[in-house]
Figure: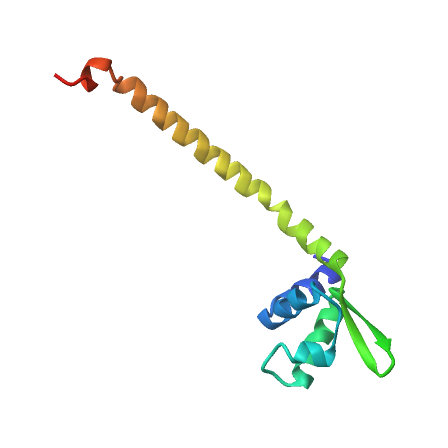
Length: 122
């Protein structure tokens, strides 16, 4: 696994950082605006933002005295690609399950055919 991907997974490993990404998905925010969303110190938020920036999941641009944090969705692409690689295993398993259920249903119908007489009221 390359270093870029390692940084992104490290950033995503923490639930607070994942919540920060969700907030940044709606709009760019200053450190203070991000901190207002959580019951942790501004210094703690700054550390989380640094990890997110190192993982290339956000970018930070100075604007006057403020630092504006911006979600970088392209940083999530390598993570999504890595996770999607494993979807084929689920797809194969689900296809096998679907076949097993259909085979079971077919065998059940073949073994015990229902006739109209069995359901008629006498």
